[in-house]
Amino acid sequence: MKHIELVTNPKMKHYVVEESYKTIRANLLFCSNDMKTILITSCHAHEGKTTSAVELCRSLTEIGKKVLLIDADLRKATVMRRLVTVQEGEIMGLSQYLSGQATIDDVLYHTQLPLMDIIFSGQCPPNPSELVGSTRLKELLDSLKEQYDYILVDTPPVGLVIDAAMLAPYCDGAIMVVALGEVSKKFAQDAKQQLEMSGCHIIGVILNEAKQNQKSHIFSKKTKYYRASK
Image 1 (cartoon, rainbow, N blue to C red):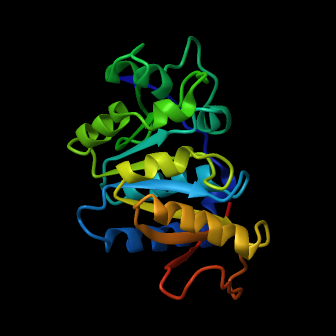
Image 2 (image 1 turned 90 degrees about the horizontal axis):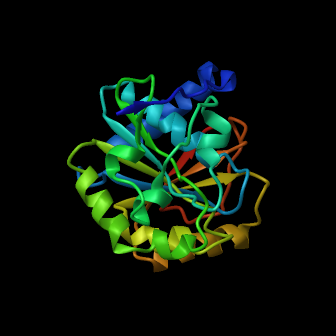
């Protein structure tokens, strides 16, 4: 398996932030044992979705869980651009695998964290929605469940493109990342409804950019809230 180096964000080492992700981790562990493939999405860009996915992966590895992060945003390589050091040669990813240009061994990358692997998004294809909604992706997720304790799938914002809703039925559950003050209540509710219509169970919300004593009423009281920071 090829190796890649994840960039460490100094802001994520703050005590309050680390404790927030431990809380998120604890809530995830109390979900059903069948909740292994988790979709991570948001309403729109720049709400901290990718950072939340990476940091949740890190937190899970700290308690011995083997985790795979899949960057399923085929429209832009978010993880590759922001969180990985520059590498020589081409980085192959999910788009190449789904289009038959690469094998699973070609696209799996091991990180410096012993229990965390990554599949990058790969080159931007002309038909991202078709690839994300393909049965080949479902078959990939089903086979990888046997190798990992958790698979976190970072998708494009559900409020911008259809990709997340198409991929959602292939996942066991979904977590929405909402930046407080960045989206309207109606926009967030519409995004939540779109996910629910796909048949994917929303297991909780990560509320970003929230001060410790702030509260929000974007969703119903039945929705779990997890506070974190970018």
